[in-house]
Length: 378
Image (cartoon, rainbow, N blue to C red; front, side, top):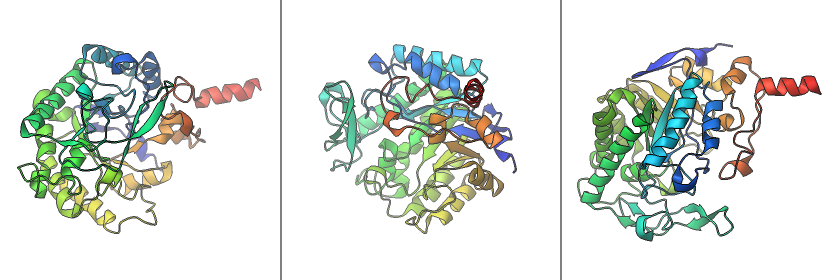
């Protein structure tokens, strides 16, 4: 078997030892004040052998939060918490960038300033539930209330929040940032014709709907330099009511516009979900769209979508992408690169521990060496 996953690559200002990326994974384990906990330091340190770690989505402001116990990057305590994580990852020889997150309409009053309504490009019902703290101290799901439409002035404030969050991430010692513009959250909501019915300069044409994304990207590049900025998109994604009417035109324009900005990378969530194993109900336009984005964007592309070792190697060999992001495999396998190199069996993740809780299902999965030791003792 080839070992393309283990070839080095440079993303802007960041040199990577391999093309194995730890995908952003929400774990809902932040401490009081949405500060990363000491357990999070261990969690990320354990996974520092990834070529690149992309952190869990990290809200840029109180308004940007939509899930219980997710970390932020907008207070000094949060910056200090992330600094401990960055230091731990770097001590192990790793690289780590922060995914900057604003959930937009996928939120709840318990998270919003003054218990207000979530914000969105357009006020309309949202087909989603929010994960909020329950009365028993555990998380529970609640209906998302109808959001209110953002004003132009508020949009400018959000752009400023993104820029400050990027500065805060670098102040904490992280190597860069990834802008979350996928999976039905705020920037995806502005991109998508199903959720953006505005009639001002942020709505209507694909160019107008992409305006906020590009303005945020430009603000991030001004704040920390384009060589430390990546962006995540979900072409043809369906999360939380997304259903773009003309994805070919929209994402051709977006990819071409991003290409002009000399970003570190573009991170794509596969429309087919399962890598190159196209799902039975996959949109037949998906493959052509992915090829077009690849042609429009000349920088490195990270692919995410249920990849295995074998189809990840094939995707790299076919130059479909340049790096592969692994999500669930990294949850249960802190030493995933070593397991992939050895073609070793993987631990199975426990879904009941994905969101919320303590060390169990978070920092207690065994490495290959620990498994071998246990077998020897037995």
